[in-house]
Each structure stands twice: as C-alpha cells, then as structure tokens.
Amino acid sequence: MGEIVNLRRARKARARVRDDEKAQENRLRFGLSKAERDLADKSRSLAERRLEGHRLDETPGDREES
Image (cartoon, rainbow, N blue to C red):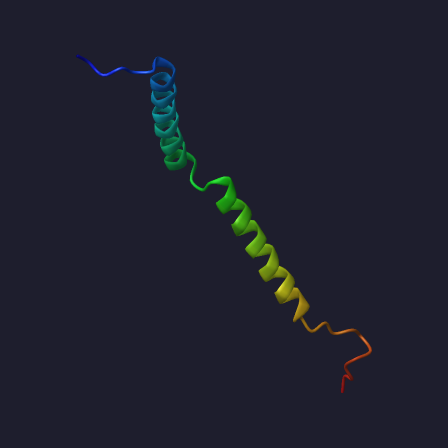
C-alpha cells in the first residue's frame, strides 16, 4: 500500500521549493540582499561620520600668515 500524503502540505512544500529556487536566482541576478545593503549603508555612514568628526577645520583667524 502506498504512503498517505496530505495534498495541501505537498502543494505548500512544492511552492516553497519553487520560491526558494527563484529567490536564489534573484540573489545571483541582483547581488546583495536588503539586509546586506542596509548593513553596508550603515557602516559607510558610520565611517563618514567618524572621519568628519576627526577633521581639523581651519578658520581664517586660526592661522597667522607671514
């Protein structure tokens, strides 16, 4: 006798596999995931703020010209 299969679960499992395959294709096609893009943006922003925070600005009155 054959195995009893719940058709609803089988359809959902098949759809899940199909969606995972499509997601993998899209990852290859479009590059980074949203989480990775957000992380890269945040780290870039942090680096820019740190660099700007360490910048020494010269105002016209600070330096004597000879």
